[in-house]
Length: 322
Image 1 (cartoon, rainbow, N blue to C red):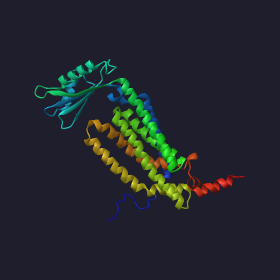
Image 2: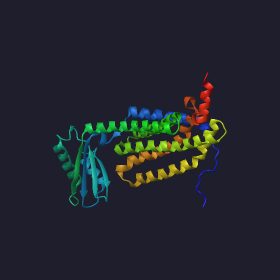
Image 3: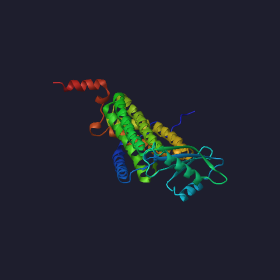
Image 4: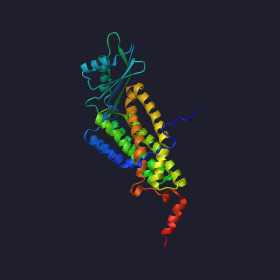
């Protein structure tokens, strides 16, 4: 059997000719994303804002839309209702006004759980409380801060790893392209107003990992071709993108199908994470082709044989000596 190929063995697409259009489109998307984040902000879930989480179990499957309607009629219109398991279980999340400390507001949390249970239950299908937890606003702020530190830790780690594995210019180009991907994903959630919770944050971090991994594959081929090909840097970089194109597209397509299945069948609690990953896979694939590699042809990031070949480095150093 022949191996699966989407593109010819040696495609000859001139990606570098399209780099300025890609840079302009990327800059516009970044500007829109930053503007949306600055003006609209995120629709933070209870993980960050604080509130109560009540898990209910029923004898029969529950119509989630009817449950939301009964909660709205009872004055809990802002409550988030998620069905999971066999359909007999509901997860209800809502904010409690004026509640700041979980330890001193156990009674308020318990009362909210009772009111939610009464609102959702019906005469022929009563519900029982499986658990009821409270997340204070201070805990939510700590989670948000930890999320920021997690992103910084990942970015710094990537810089160090790629600098050792390749060269400093590669590390800077890879991180710039990956940060673009993350900003666009975050901008989408700010623009759409979709709920931003801890699972979305996990999805954003996975976008960083996917984007870096895809970029490293292209960079690895660029390094190998600099050692084996006799051509100018632009030709080598363009050939490297073409040679890895089929692998990049196939890997991204399979990854997209996986997160699409998670989005469709994973339930409401995982939908935000799957949504962020779907957007990240598409943007990350495009950035590794049209942004990350072309960055290595610009300014101080421009890669030459002296950057990648030890012998060429030594010869260049000797030539600079008086």
